[in-house]
Structures are given as C-alpha cells and as structure tokens.
Length: 435
Length: 187
Image 1 (cartoon, chains in turn brown, orange):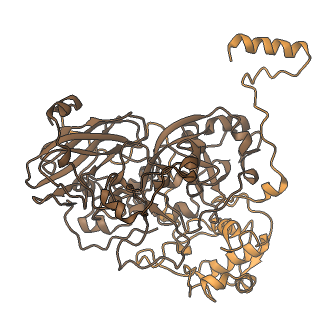
Image 2 (image 1 turned 90 degrees about the vertical axis):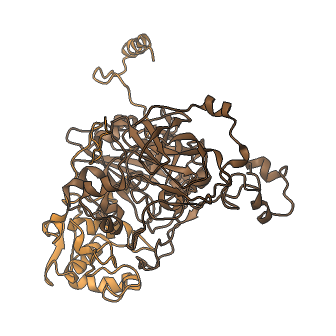
Image 3 (image 1 turned 60 degrees about the vertical axis):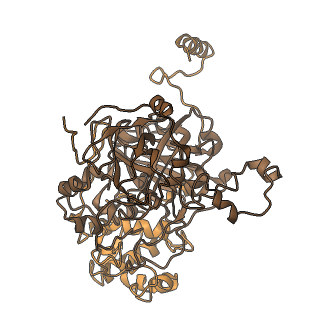
C-alpha cells in the first residue's frame, strides 16, 4: 500500500488535457452537447418558469432511472403498478449532495400519498409520561439541525453485474436534512424506564412500521421536514420523515405520523418479510451500513476518448461514521494509491474522491476501496463470499435483503478502445432485485 | 440560555407564586396536545398482542367477510388465486411469494396489518371483530389453527407461528456496534 502520490496542485501543474476527459454517452452527461438535438428548438432561459423556480440547461438531460426487473426470468411479485421507485443517475453527478429530483426513491407497493401538511401531525405515545401530538407548525418551533446524510436501500447493488453504475449502485443518495432531533421530542414526552425501542409509523397506504433501537433514536435520529433547503418532497415523505443516519433505508420511515415507545422490537410486516435471517451472523448487519465506495467516472458504458490525462472520481461512504481513506487501483487491485477527498468529509455522508490518472491506452481495471473511521475496510467479492461462506453462485442468487449489505469492491474494466464495462466476472445466476 | 438568566426566571416565578419543578430544569416547550381517544384507538399492535382491543372472530365469519369486504377481489375467492399475493401457502425459496403468512413470526402482527392497511383501496373500514375473524380465517386456511378456534385478544397471542424460530429478535444497538464482518487492512 503506497502513500499519496499525487495532489490537486500536481495535477493542475501537469496540465490535464481537457479533450481527453471521459465522455458519457449522448444525452447522459452533464455537458453532452448531443443532448441538444432532443431538446426543444427554441428555449428561453428568460421565461417566467425559469425565473420562478429555476431550470437547468437544455443541454443537461439527466433523469432518474425507473426501477424495473433486473432479469426477464424473474417473476413479477404482484401485479401492482403502485411502485414509482427510481435510481440515482450516479455517473452524471458531481460533488456529494444528490439533487433532490434525482435522489433515489424506493416505494413498497402502496404509492406516494398526497398529504396536506395542515392536516398532518406526529403522535408520540407508548411508554412515555406525556403522550403528545405535534402539528407541523409546532415541530418547526423546536430547535433543529441541518446535516448531510446518505440514504441507501439495503437492496442497493440491485444487480452487481449491471452495465452502469446506476444499475449497480443507484439505490442511494445524499441530502442535507433539516429537522428536529428526535431526542428533543423524546425529552418533551418523557421516556419511561423500560422503554428500549421506538416503533415509527408512516401515513402511507402500507402504514410502514419499523423498530429502531432507543439508543439510536437518542443518538442522531432526526424528524426531518427539510431536504436540501426545501420541504421534503412527496416521494421522500412529505411533510415529515424519519432520518436514521447510516442505517438501512427501511429505517427512514416516510410520511411519519407516529412514534411509539416500547420495550421490544415489533418485527412487523416490512421488517420480517424478505428479511429472513436464520443465520445469527446476519443479525448485526441489519442496522448500519459498512464501508463502501464506487467509481462513478469512468464507469460502465462510458467511453474514454483519448489516452492521456483523466481523473478517476467516485463516492465513498460508511454507516459507521467518517470515511478515513479511499484508495484507487488501476490494475484490478494488485496495487492501490490513496485518492484525494474532494469535499467535506462528514460522518455518514457521501464523500467525493478523485485520483488523477494518465491512461496509456492499454487495458486497465479501475476500482476503489474505503476505510472508515471504525477501521473497517471494504471487502473484495472473494472476501465477502468467504465471510458468508457462500459460493459465487449463491452470492449472486441470494436476495440481497436477506444476504445483508453487498458492499464488495466494484471493478470497472477499461478496454484498449476506451470502452468501460463491468469488471466483475459474468455469472449465470438469475439476479433478483426483489422489491 | 445563560445559567444566570434561568436563575432570574426561577426567582421571578417563585416571587409570583408560580409552581416550580426543581427536578426539571429544562422546562418543556408547552407545544403539542394530548392524543384524542380516536387517535389512541388506532392501535399499533406488537408481537405479544398486548395492545389488542377486546373482540372476537371465528373462521366461518372470516370466510364470509373475506368475500363481503372485497378481500377476494385481489387475493382470489379462497385467498390463493390472486391476482395479488397469495395468502395461503407460498414458498419463499421459489420467490413466487415473499410474504407467505406461514412465515410471519407473530400471529398478532397479522391482525395489526389487516386492521391498519387492508383493504388496500379502503384501509380502516374493518371493525375490530371483522379483523379477528379475517385473522382466524387466514390462520385456518394456512393450517395453523383449527376450524372451530375463535380468535380474541387472549387466544391470538397464544397462536404459535410455525416458522417462529426462523427469526432472531434483534439485539439492541449501541454507537459502538460494528457491522457484522470485519476485514482489517493489511499492515
């Protein structure tokens, strides 16, 4: 493991050739000029709509990717159209905050409710001294915090063999969340001795419920009404959601309407279904995410136009706190170099990394690995399979939410013609994205 | 708030004869209201069924309600024909159904889910007794209780689900809890 070999200054001095930067396929990149052909003939950046709510350039056409089945052999679970879930287009994004309209969303078959905030409230009951119901207006009269946290589905890695980074890692995003620390509200109601869990309930059609350890609830959980400076959007839980930093996405109950203090976890419908864990080894895996990282540029289906100077860039994160170090390999993991961390390094938030790289025009395998502040290192696929005592076929055939967190290293293979593909070896296993 | 401010306020309150709670230096905001009875009746029922309301339902009642309340429209006349997920049988290993009732660890959770979430298009219309009856019907159809068994707040929590032992009750979490696996970097 060698030390840091490059720096931002060194890169600038070396004068990276702009013309050699990775170009995404048409209509996907941040600056893909080819996208213009698909836009309107006339586009007025001065019209009222642009003035009132702002609008991106017509040359930028990135959208979320609607969730679907990953494999034609996978049977539909139920004939229900009410599942407007979508993935984040990671390859097209820069920085650490995911724009809200592009932030992934996972719905569990009950659709997105249309809630009037004036009629919505949050009840806190159970093992408390004073059960109370708060209106939205009242919640906004409490002290609040704004914190950047990543949000990720336990089923992220929907298809490890997918061709793009949105296909392999698109079920995650990072937002600045604003809200009341749950500890403040719990102090208001007075938690009784004997309470050890909270049950959070949403107002969606499925009345999603999730058990959260009280220790976590008192640690850093937020009752959030703001996302990236605006009210939380409907597909993220408008007007109120729970944010449980670093924990699996399913803990972050949307359309939050009730918190009940209890003395045991409920293992309710969305907790036990698809989360069968006969193996005790998985038990501690159902809370916070381990260390993870992925290169988003260059990544699958992108094309290196010319050899010479490039920058390898991606995201690193961990539910265990801050990212301590990110290392990048251009030779499939034989050697690693330490990457630069480009932005703020915040606990339980996406951290952007990059490594300047001079491509010699030959084959290369690019991959990254993350070390978090707990000292946990992101595993390779082989290390991961060994830990779970699974064959590769089993690894790819097991429903992820039952398997645990699939955070093994993602390699991207660069061919001599500059084409980038998924560097994981093919598997015949039918990959099932579940729900 | 600076400590001296608090002291002044407390002193002022004492002078004015207001009640002072010496045990609660952090005064509560006064925001929020107590829940209404209706809000408290909308119970969230846990695995031990402790908050189940009084009521009862039979398998025969459940069969009738299953048709009358529209359950059969989505789940089929006997609960296994679909088009929505089958409520009878099901095998998680075939992935034809991720949510077989036979795999639910706790019987009261079935009551809780039906009561709060079903019917899909009109949640909340089922009465307490109807919910007991539907729970009884589904448990019977899955071979878990007998045809004559009556489900109540007392009997439902006593139903032992066949796959209960597939589940471990999660241990609690502390900020020091690590992710399950640990691969330390080479030194």
